Length: 75
Image (cartoon, rainbow, N blue to C red; front, side):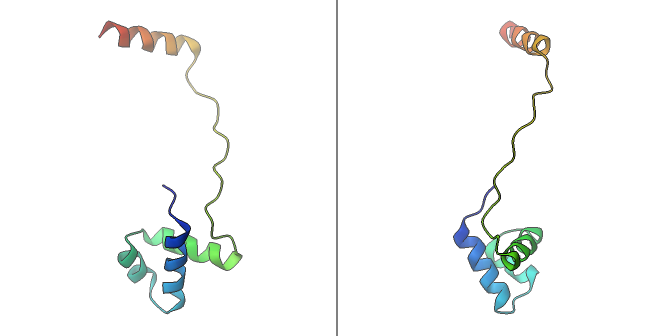
């Protein structure tokens, strides 16, 4: 899930005001690892979410897909 920039900025500001990672996570309803990640990203000047990378090829073969379609059609 991608969180809004507004939320990310408010989280970082709360940390700068001296709140602990746990307090910030509870207040904003996000995980502690997310808070730490946003804090680190903010320090590097990279707070916006990253761009998702390319998806790898499917692991299913064409024969697998045909078999699944046949099974679904039987139900």
